Length: 218
Image 1 (tube, one colour):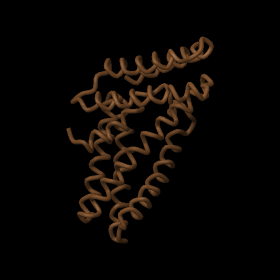
Image 2 (tube, rainbow, N blue to C red):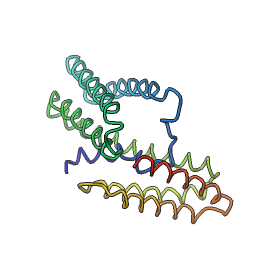
Image 3 (cartoon, rainbow, N blue to C red):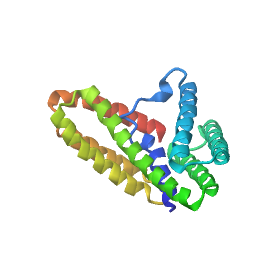
């Protein structure tokens, strides 16, 4: 399977694999409008970063902006038309595919030197996203169960292992719901083992809520 696709798929599927440690944004008022506003701002920041890191010409900048805009529109259309027609993992794969197609279109207008820089840039972005996700997960968990500094240090390698194992699972032709559930259970059991009885009472409620969301989405 194409590595670029896998990289995009990994982040697209995180919402399915780690639903409980993130807010359920779909329940927030005006969440679609907020998401669209965020996407527009994010696209502009992404374009500015590309322009700076790849030294894009004005002509290339205009073309990249058009490619990104088309990609966002395709993503928005896919969300609306496929929401009730596809399983969440399949829908996420579709979105990941759009990301890969967008990247290929961008690379097609770059020079060979710029393409190398683009690949390096994307690798850096992947690392930052991974770190950002782990930071948000840890912050959310810490807020919910009041982790001590010592417990935070112990939780980090658990999350590292979880994401590593998740990446391996997602490299398979078709991800297994049961396999991902097993990874989530192992992660949660390991976290529970370092919590106090009082913290585990709160964590048990989180796990129950997470399982309900997981079943609803899959």
